[in-house]
Length: 207
Image: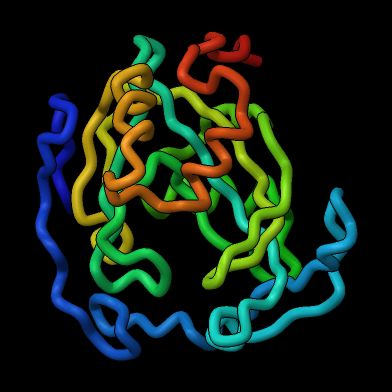
C-alpha cells in the first residue's frame, strides 16, 4: 500500500518490483479479454473481443473509463503511473480507470477500476463525457466520470500507482498548460474537451 500526500507534487510511494509479464507481483494481464467497439459509432457498439495484448499490439478500438476524484474542497487526486504500465509508464494522470472487459458494463468497469486503483468504493459516479480518442498507441471510446471522496483512507494499487496526492484543480490546470510536463496525453485531451472541469459542481445528493 502506498501513502497519500496532502501536498501538490509531494509524491509518496515507491516503484514495485516487476514480476512476470512485465507486471508487478507476477501479474500478467496480457490474456485478459477486452471488448472491441465500432469506431464509427459515437455511442459505442460492441463488435467482439480480443486479448489485451492483441488490443495493445494492433491498437484495436475498445472502450475505457476514467474517473476524476474530487475531495469537495477544490482539489482533485493526481497520481504518477508505475514504470511497468503498458502505455505511458511513469506519466502523471488524474483519471483513475482502464479498459472495459469483454461482457462488462461500462459503469461497473468504472467502479471496479476506481476501487482497484484508489480503494474507493460505494460512491456516486456522475457521467461527464463520452468521446473517441486515438493516437499512435491507443484507440478507445472514453467514458469519463467524476466522483467525490467519502473521506475514508485511499489505498493505492501498487501495480498501477507509484505515488499520489491531492492537488487544487486550478493548480493542475496551470500545470497542464505546460506541454513538457509528463502527463498522459489522452487524459490531457479529454480534460480539454470537458468544459470547466476545474470547477467543482458539488457532489450529487445522496440516496
